[in-house]
Length: 168
Image (cartoon, rainbow, N blue to C red; front, side, top):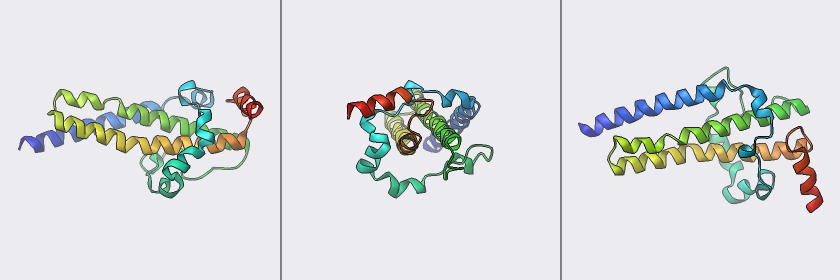
C-alpha cells in the first residue's frame, strides 16, 4: 500500500511541477529567446547540430517525440517549419530555445524527490527526469544548429559565425 501511495504522490508532484514550469516558460516573452543567450548558444563543437545526428542519430528518432503544441494548443508547433523567410526561421530557432530551457528546468526538481522517497525510488525518479528530457534538449539543439547555419549572420550569433568562418 505504501508503494501505491508513493506512486500517487510522485505522479501528482511531477504533474504539478511539469505544468507549472511549462507555464512559466510559455509566458516568457519571445523577445528573450530572440537574443543570443549564452546558456542556450550552440557551441562550435556541435557543428551546427550535426554532431547530435552523427553520435545519436537524431533524424531517426526525433519524429517520435511529442511536441508541446499537441498538449497546449496555443504553443508553437515545432514539428514543421512555418515558413522559409529569415523571420520565420528566427522565430522557430527562438522557440527551440524556449523548449530547451523548459526541459532543462523540468529536470531541476528531481533531487527534491529524495526528500520523501526511499533512495531507490529517488534514483528511479532522477533517471526518469533525465531520460524524459535529454532527448528533447538534444533535438532542440540539433534543429536550432541547422537553422542557425541556414540563417547564417542573423541577429544572434552574428559575430560568432564570422569568427568561426575565419578560423576554418
